[in-house]
Image 1 (cartoon, helix red, strand yellow):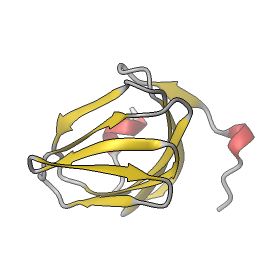
Image 2 (cartoon, rainbow, N blue to C red):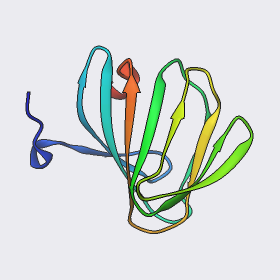
Image 3 (cartoon, rainbow, N blue to C red):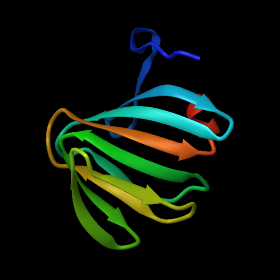
Length: 108
């Protein structure tokens, strides 16, 4: 399977972040997210394991009440049901979210 960016539709989320689903299988999903300074991913938890990889920009990440600034090349891992969230610190920030299993709620 090949996923071409020019054929991938972007969706703007309630918080203004833009998400593109880059591909998925039953047990894996990769999403590209474009953020601007001040946009917030509220603290939440879900039944998916998640890795967030910062490609560009910076974020203040929160997990289980602890905070950490993440920059390009950094990542976070959240086990299922672990509360986590982000605040974007720079315009034009970019990250990849990797989920297992896939997020069926993103496909609706």
